[in-house]
Image 1 (cartoon, one colour):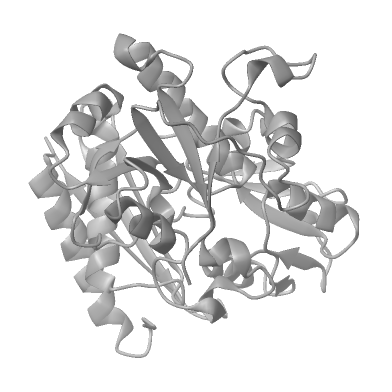
Image 2 (image 1 turned 30 degrees about the horizontal axis):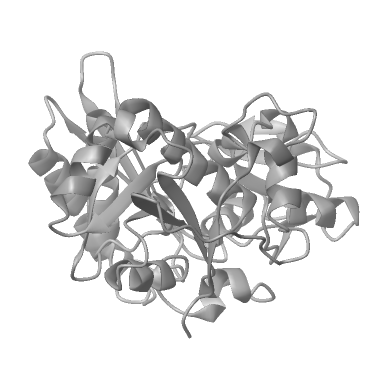
Length: 358
């Protein structure tokens, strides 16, 4: 099913009194101006845009798309006009089916398939993706030449009742849509229950307030990009909850061979983040993982530029957790890919054929 496409242009003259920017909508404006609370989208089509940015319609996705638009406008005078860059909102399967866990909906590309299709049809020029949602193999005709600087990779514990997992009594419910988070919680805190808990940040907070769960988990990167890090009750250290592959990173996809757009995007690229993401995604590719298998990975660079890569696979019920680690001095993209592939293959062999679910 093809995703619904809407062309949206934020109008500064409609902004609220609390706004501190004429170009970037805040969370409240993203909800109200774009009708996100009711599931509709107000939009105006323009024929003058030089560049069209495709994105999902959640407040976080829109915040990321506007961040890209503003950076491009600052970097290029020929993209600084009010109508030069257009935001195109595309509904994906994961957006439309919210009553089931991601692992029950389908395989890879749940957040990207419809956006990819729009890109290949020429309906958008750039796609803004959370790297953790992007399959390791991109569709033919699409490339991702730009990885933006990475945000906070950690997970946030959020509760209106408790300060951390350690405070939660037996039988307390943790709501999450992530199998990785589910498996890690069950491994470390087997006295807790985990239930499927989907929706954007606002939806999950409302569910917490309604008592549907005692706590939930969100990425700190998303809270930071929405301008609300204070929502986190407790920030979980990476050693306690290794993040998802690519967590906190944004990738910009284009049609392969579109040199004009690639040149526009080039100033937004971060080589260090690209190195880290390359290692993590190589491990995921070697594991051939999908949203049905809890997989975590984190590549870090120390002050000397040495890369440390940690990769983990966990059974969904938390009963088994396998780790491995690699270190690479003076990393380049080929080397990062190699150690990621090697780490993934090791875990694949150690886990056996029934550990990684297709």
